[in-house]
Length: 268
Length: 268
Image 1 (cartoon, rainbow over the protein chains, first blue to last red):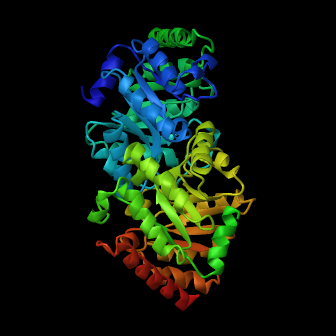
Image 2 (cartoon, helix red, strand yellow):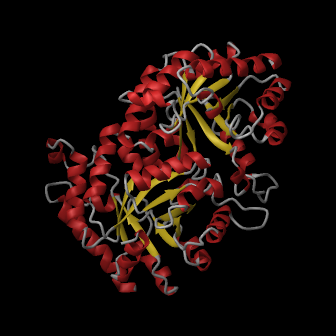
Image 3 (cartoon, rainbow over the protein chains, first blue to last red):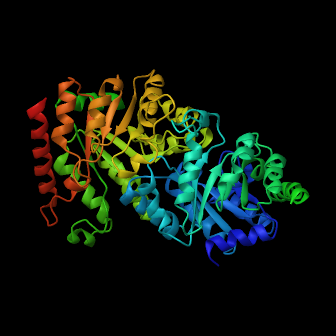
């Protein structure tokens, strides 16, 4: 199945929650530390418990890189363990000059085999096009992020009266000839979401920030349902994967995911 | 020696060229492929030949990540091989929400032991502060990059009449209370360099783009020397490390580096 089709197939099933595997060796249940690769054991259990109810899995590279080569190995094994039909996101936030971006794209898509990646647009079109050349993959451009610092640059007003994040969305639409681009739009910005959703056109929307960061799932889903758009993926990391801390942690995660899915069903 | 002191000590010696170890297994001399880790053997020879003449070494993460775990291992070994008194740059272009940035910082500074890092400012101050907390390290913020795509966002005009990259420089100055911040300013933008150099205050300036990308070393050095500023580091990657392609490749690299240094001596 092509990467984009995996995502659309999840949406068709009413699945819109992406499980964020921000797996931190200092936060996983203590009994897992007995294993050779505790982070992989944690991910395996979470995937096993949630695979029928999750729209996608997102791996935040920061958490794996911080453990060095062992962390990268846990990431590789996790990727292989995720069922082939479920969409995966490399939350790597890359973006560099052309020949370097081509190398990052090779790492994410060819070495690890992810279905999609998150990208920093700051350096412009030619820093992103080496990713876009992977036409079968999905590319999420950072537009408006979920953190308070989004006010520093993303929400600056341009001389054309638009905000920088609106210009990012406009250019992303211009670049979307293969209909495989998306944006990252923080779930903490529900007012901006309501005001800008009409400009999203065919873009996939990845919304982080629900849970630990305070974004409201109900708000988000309501806004998309009012527009009759189903092109969205809400990422939830900490609030899901650390729902439990004892030996029943993966069941606790699954139960929480089902609760989130039920909130979504109410609106769609 | 503290990271910042390594850099200042290089400047005191009149050294301003950073050797960019964008080491690509497809471009290194073929005879090295006989080794178990050809990229590390290449880096070792380049470092051995250039260590007395280089101000710093910059490792572009893209080139190492593209080779997966083997590439990361070559990066680790290279870092350990660089003499302790020479400044190192993790050209990783990271930037994420706080808890993720903290993980990236841990990877770059604690796991690999780099002296500095390059950072994407788009997500704002709270995406950078987990790096800044490493007060002994130097943090280079992307202001104006060397690629044509810098026109897409970095050169957009804001409602306050300034360009986005100028706002990045302004905020970086505001954040520079530990006098350990820098900016990345592409050497291909010599007009903008001349027009903005007075706004750089105490910031270290990392200038990529000389050589393969077409920036002129003479131009850059002239502009800094007119301002009596020595706070700059010119990165040269491909034009240096691939100066030769046979068994004398490392001597060719050293000779080229000495040529570049002589251009700098003429002006300073």
